[in-house]
Length: 219
Image (cartoon, rainbow, N blue to C red; front, side, top):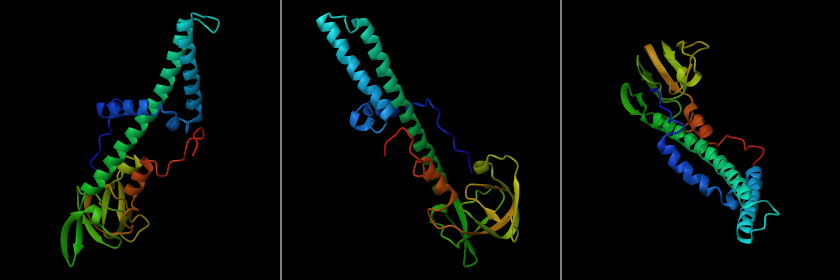
């Protein structure tokens, strides 16, 4: 798999929408799902009222104007920063999911049909389709090797830099979409239905389809 470059944490394309989202999340109807920060926001609103009161009335029995203002600013920035951090994480997850989706759609597959090889998009592959991979090819879909032997780079999915040997007829005959053939030639039969491949599951995971809610958040 050609390595997809993850966007920088402070990339402009992430910062701008995240900043907008941080202010949008100040809406109590949105923030109430996070009880901790919702409580802080209530305290922020109370401090704003007290700050205005101390300024208008001159009464410092509940704290001076300067003190109340400082507390209000600290609380407000706390809520805003928490919203911003959450928005950045969500934006980064969406960018990574889009990167994986682009990899899946752009990877070509040398599909074997009626003795001929057709170059198709990996997104159209179905279970029991057969494709061929040679040196330098990206494996387009999860499958089982039915013919041949190859050295495969699986670092894109396992993080392990050392290549592995995969061959037909053995315990190590399965291959994963997105890995790269470093040598030789193999013939592979697709073993997963569309939408159930490793890359599809990774996309769902990154997008949060399989993510559990944080215990401090309400359903």
